[in-house]
Image 1 (cartoon, rainbow, N blue to C red):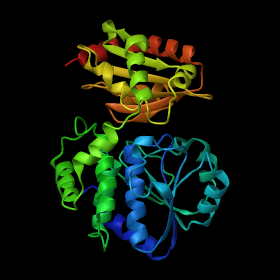
Image 2 (image 1 turned 135 degrees about the vertical axis):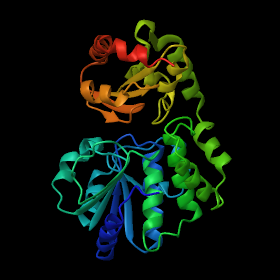
Image 3 (image 1 turned 45 degrees about the horizontal axis):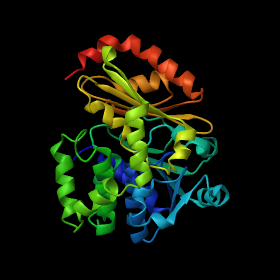
Image 4 (image 1 turned 30 degrees about the vertical axis):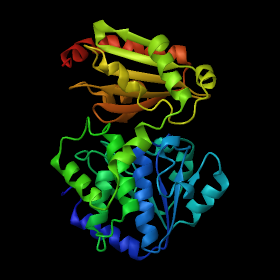
Length: 343
């Protein structure tokens, strides 16, 4: 595991020697890797007697609430004043699992004005230069995997306890679709083996994340597949769209649509799948692809997004109808690339 230079580790250790109060921040609409890596770092630093806090821009999905330490998380959209106080008091800020500040949504302008020391740990390509120390590698499965290397490279890095291991395993598992993609490196499985050695119950973690959904979520999934799935066989693409009224009808909670975007990829000949979810002020978009089609390039060019080749995100501030029209128009330009990516 050589994704982090020794000089970067030494630079980070010097910063840690001079600070006491630390804040950890991850991205808007946090997923398993965002929450898992943030809580893993939280436990590690707390065990080293740092005064540490975790702030997330918006609420975490319900299926992650079992993770150790979730009760200590501050949600910026719910408690902006107290969250700002924690940020102002911090002597060091860790940014985890995002590479551009706009992924923090409403926190972006506020964070840009801070002169506080900042460290970024992330696995997405082409990070912005907004931190004093940037630990970034696309050669890992997840930020949680990169964080494992970071923690075990520190002077006292062998102290990976069960709570930390559960959080890291959850991050790796969810960011690889339970090891179905982005997980071809032997290093990933080596790290997983070391986490299992800490006594984690990997089967229970899987159940907590993937087999613990509400009835409303299952009904919403059935409705989307039956009524809201639109397939474009000539372009090897498909999408699902959900309106805010439909979310309300099915008592939507954060995380209920997790994994929906993957279902169209099960259709023979489909290599590009997208889900559009309407919220009050924007449309949240998730992209998934197979083979050599770059979902992140498509997201970046057309929908203010980015991510990995086969898994990306973005958003639109246009209406849902206009956003869908735009998507249907743009995929026509990618017909050749999409058809080449058919497996």
